Length: 150
Image 1 (cartoon, rainbow, N blue to C red):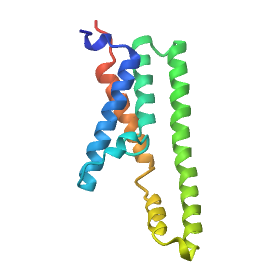
Image 2 (image 1 turned 45 degrees about the vertical axis):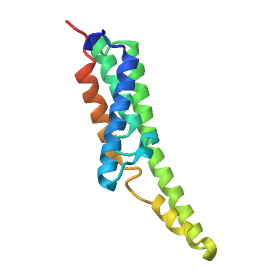
Image 3 (image 1 turned 60 degrees about the vertical axis):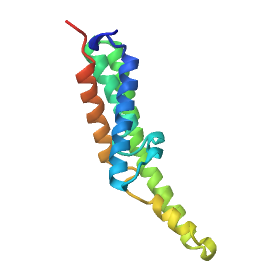
Image 4 (image 1 turned 90 degrees about the vertical axis):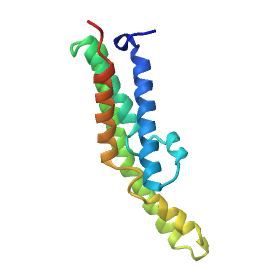
């Protein structure tokens, strides 16, 4: 059996992502008062999957190899680009949902699709708090399980 600190980086990142998705399942199931298995397939939501795994990767790489290594530099750049894109994607997808809503709302024959499209405007789907919670969760997960023994 592998000791806690001897787990490979890739395994820690995957476990962090899985743990974050389980928290997401719990949060959304409690809020909606029924089991929401569909959230397991979503990268957005509380906590953000991308922010979680990228911050976990960064923390574990820095803890194991230090700041002055090329691996840490790569992980930092990868995390910054990934998290920045996640936030930008939120803004672009919000504009797209609003445009689609206005198009559907202007069609009298849209019927029940108006409510479905209105549900896409739910601000809980993409929010900066989700990204921040993902960064915090992934970073703490990396700190808790990523150190080498000794």
